[in-house]
Length: 219
Image (cartoon, rainbow, N blue to C red; front, side, top):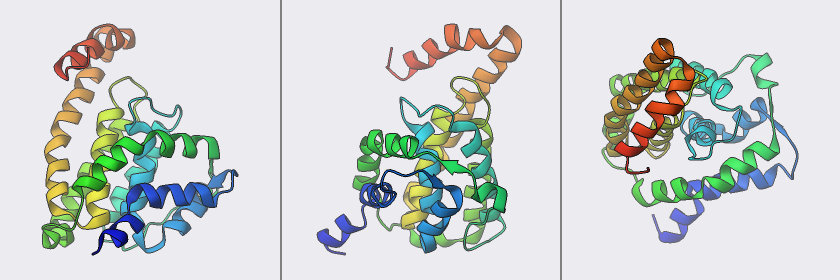
């Protein structure tokens, strides 16, 4: 593939084109599913994971999108070729403001993925057994995203973002990387959930969040 072709198929361009196609109007889940077409699971998961994967996430997206991605993970595990949602989910409104916010502020992770992602170990990326394992991981990460607590959505949604990019471009190496990140994300989410249950939700903000930031060198 030439550099021009790579640019034309860049993830950031695909998402920017989608936002521009809305012409400032709200969209629906059904319209989004229909738009991604044969890019199916990969691009749809990428779009749904992006809002919560940002360091400053768009509010209100993690739980409903997490539930949708559990459904997508199940379908992927069952071997469906294209995503499907019931009519009541297809009618769910996606605000233009929220979608635009996510794509605009998601340029740095998109650019990072564009540098790294390319077809590698494509046989592994197409292997049904491995894809089922990826799908189960997506479901676990999405379930964590759905918990309304700090530290339970950003890291898991970033893992889904990485796995979605790997599915989209049949990049087996990126899929392996995402699978290696998953235990770290679920460990952080599990620690937050345990702390919330034993000490109360406020303890997550006061103790666990600063501790995790220190581990990551963000304090």
